[in-house]
Amino acid sequence: MIQTKPKKEPEAKSYLSVKGVRVFFPLLESFTQKSGRISKEVKPLFPNYIFGNFDAVQDYTLVKYGKGVNKIVSFGNEPAPISEGVIEEIRGRVDDTGIVKMKFDLRPNDPVRVKSGPFRDFLGIFEKWLPEKERVRILLNLIGYQPQIELHFSLIEKVA
Image (cartoon, rainbow, N blue to C red; front, side, top):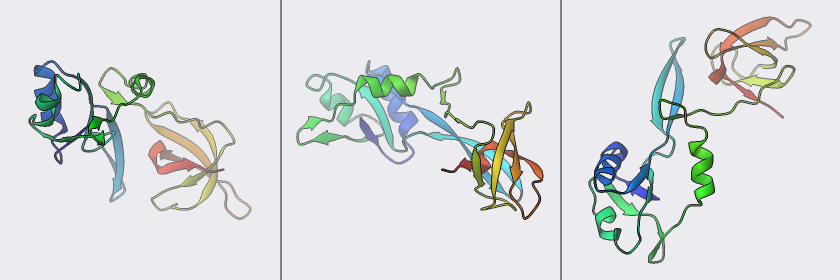
């Protein structure tokens, strides 16, 4: 694993790729709510880090002093190895656009909590995914009444 300088992951990835180092830089969609609107942005899955597959002896100097690189994550004097299984698990979740898709294991009747917005901290029951992109329908638990509301999936979380 390679630690990059702040916000220099794309620069380090580009430089090392050109030099022949196999680099993996997973991205993640992040959703924020401001003034009632949900905005989406793409961020690094691991900010300030990229995965690099390189020869620890032959390519060490090339990687360590590469553009955008801060340091090679190491234990003692040896680069810290990352299991290929971990990398493949992340790669298996990457879509065609290079973005890691998170798995949401919501099923009908699962208890959920609203994370933000006017219904923040309200509990409810997941009803279904809606045909509209990235929206869900839940039943809010109110005193003697369960209204259906539709929200962006990023506004809810499953509770135990």
